[in-house]
Structures are given as structure tokens and as C-alpha cells.
Length: 237
Image (cartoon, rainbow, N blue to C red; front, side, top):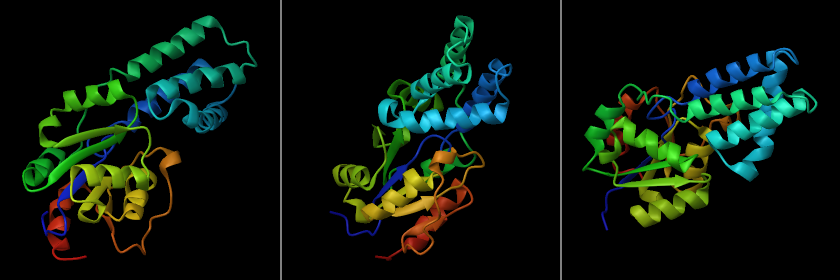
């Protein structure tokens, strides 16, 4: 077992390595337009968010659950009178989400190139299995990762399991991502470093307070700063 303080680095995928939330926002606006005769866009978005929260435990994260939540919201907003053609259109815009282009974020490839071979790199993402596999393949980043984990949710238990299986345990691992709730806070609870890389568009459900007092919490402006942060960790416990 390596005696280095850090041997394994986990990366979130959506809105950390490539754009994702922007496509959901565009779809939500399209959805609101479809129901504009029944409610204003703010009310529709509010009801959609309520449906998404209710349905996470049933459908999990990802496009399929989002599409089902749109259909449920359309039924509620129209009091059960939503036309079949609108349901068809909702299915179409949900299906379009499954084929949106993959746009990697700045500094991603250079950072992965700099770290690969020196650390075990693990992609840890949640969402639809087929969609996440598609995006990874189209991104051209797959070869940088020693392991890929597509999970139903991200908790401290998840990170302990993955970092113990892939690396030298959570204490010698780091998780990097744009979600405080999913990527940072549970990783720190597992004993790892949690590195917050803010994205201008982050799903409201993923918002929690920054754990500023946690010794292993870090925050960077973009992934281009990650290599320097890792170098500065040095011999920290």
C-alpha cells in the first residue's frame, strides 16, 4: 500500500467534466411553453420541481425520471385534461435529452492528462446508465479513468465502498465535483477530501451550505486549479 497521502481521485461527470444542466433548463422552458395555456412558467416550474422531489425515491436521478415528472406535472396542471398530443411532445423532448451533444468543460482534458498515471482516477456519477455511458464514450475521456462507477445515489457509504475497492481507502482519496450535496459533503463524511468546483447552473436540489469548517474541504474556481491544489496537499493527514 502506498504511503502517499493521496492516491485516488474521484470525479463527478455532469457539470464537472461536461455540460448537462443547461440542456435540462432548455427542456424545462420548452415544457412550460407546452402548458402555457394552463399556468405561467413560474408555477409550472414550481410544480415540476415538487414532482421531481417526490419521484427521486421511485425513479432515481436522470432523464427518465425527469420525463415522467414532466408528464405527472402536465396531468396535475391541466387537472387531468392534458391532450395526448402534448404527452407525445413531452416524450419527444425527453427523448431529445438522451441525444444532446457532449460539450466538455474548460481545463478538463489537460487536468486529466496531468493526473492520469500518477493517481487512480475514478469516474463516479449518478443518473441513467445508458445516458451516462453514452456521454462518457462521446466525451473521449474514458481512457483517463481506471474505474467507472454509475451509482443510484452518492452517500458517505458509497464513497467508502468505492474508494476502498478501487484505491487505498477513503482517507487517501479525493472527490471532485460541482455538487456540494452529492460530491463534497458525503465524501468528507467518508473521510476523503471534498473539492467543490462551482458551476453556474446547478440543480437546486443539489444546493447545501459549504462545509467551510471541515478540514478536508477545498474549493477551486475551475478544474485548471486542481493539480496545484493536489500538489499543495503534500503531507497533510
